[in-house]
Length: 237
Image 1: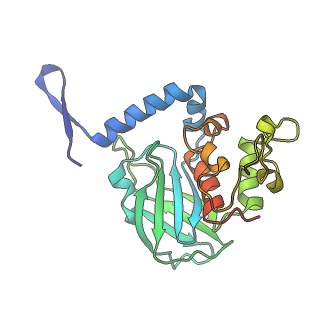
Image 2: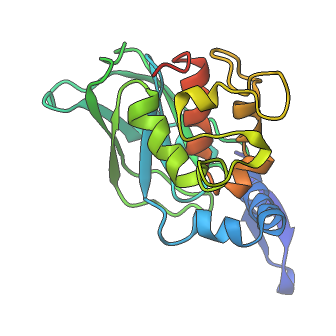
Image 3: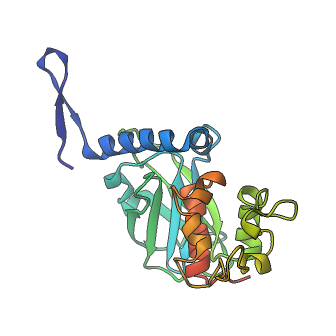
């Protein structure tokens, strides 16, 4: 990427890439909008790497720090392995920084799929640079191919949503502590969860910067897990 130059004292000029300037501006804006929730979401307790299925031929990988777009797009920096079969990595067709708001989620498209539904996989990242050009430590994360309510959504919702949408408190007359409740209507007649619909209320309100995203302290990958479960996996139990 071509550098954008800015002048500092003494007439010296220093390169500052568009990637870096945009990331700094985004981080400052999000901190102002979300207050302490942003600090909690991006704090020292964040895992260095998380991963989840996006569909049968794609995996999303979430980093703890915003990434340089060019580095995140280097597929050679990533390896996907099925547990028990380390000698045969799954071929990766491409890598792309899919998270345009926080710059933390990379989408890996697989040419070696489909993933075996329910099987355990490991994704490894090596030499990826953050938005300031710092090489991130090598890291790996486990994930189970495919998304299901019981294995994936129930624990996520229990951690982030059920305090306000559970048996003791049901804001908006809506509960998230059971699949039958997720399929309910809340305060109007339209179901909040519609399998296959990326614009249904459950998906829309948990997108980054939307109300339930911030109140539930979701991460970008959490929001994508909800969307991909509804859309790619048809909200299956």
